[in-house]
Amino acid sequence: MDTTLAKGLGVLDWLARQAEGARLGEVAQALGLGRSNAHRTLQTLVQCGWARQSLDDSRYFASLKLFELGGLVDGAVDLKDRLHPFLAALAQATGETIHLAVLQGPDIVYLDKFDSPMPVAAYSRVGGRAPAHCAASGKALLAALALDDSALRAQLGASGDALPAHTPHTLTTLQALQADLAAARTRGWASNAQEWRLGVCGLGATVFNARGEAVAAVGMSVPAIRCSPAQAAALAQPLCACAAQASTSLGLPASACADRPGSVAIARPTARPTNPQVGGTRPRPAINCPSPVPLPSQP
Image (cartoon, rainbow, N blue to C red; front, side, top):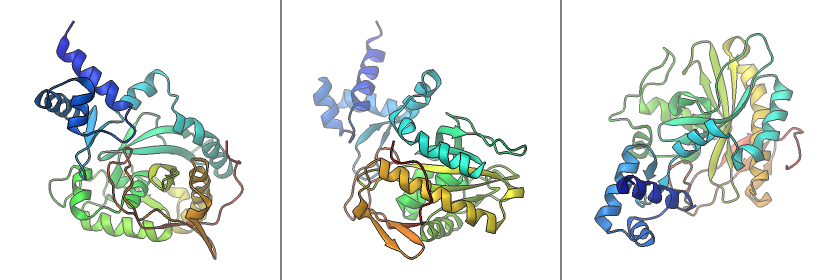
């Protein structure tokens, strides 16, 4: 037996079971490893994409690479199963392509999707990835994180202020992206105007768990021919309603939502909750969503 491989798999297996991640000393103690040995193993897992290290407190977390492989084999995860009915209702109500995504480093990973029945439709696949800075779901999650320039640069793996372009419409500077994320926080949903694929636009709204942490985003991909500013604003209402009700299904308390004319404000706590899904711990500002429309009751 390859003992080095067995040790690495043992660390990964244990780390994946720690909901709040673990520091180096905790990993070493739990698995009976020397600190230097544990550090080498953890850094190897990070470099190979199987783990990540928080920028805030240096805790280690298992990455979503496990989910990506698991999705190819089984495709069943609790988050996907619990939110599936809400996505189904949104897909039926709008007729557009709907997906559920989570943030992993500079990318989003698609957990679930419903294809549009229309002749002209946008395409994505479960287990697939898209760059977060030019996909609406990714922008929704980045907006919820409210990272400063340095942290956003690290999240996206950017060496400077330039971001990679995928179409002529991609936002290619950190400053332009930050302005777009600020606008998304103000209106309650993020947008993608042919920034990832030509001819395809997108909308994204964040899903929060019981602790007010951004754990996923509901996204809608729409052909550009059906996504004028007025059409996007109309589609954003059921999208945000879906995300808000999905958040409630995950335990977001009623006290976290404050009614105001024409909107529902989903407030996050001022404490510093740990969020292993999206890689950061920091206070987050409120994001407003349009008033809910009828969607399924909590599954």
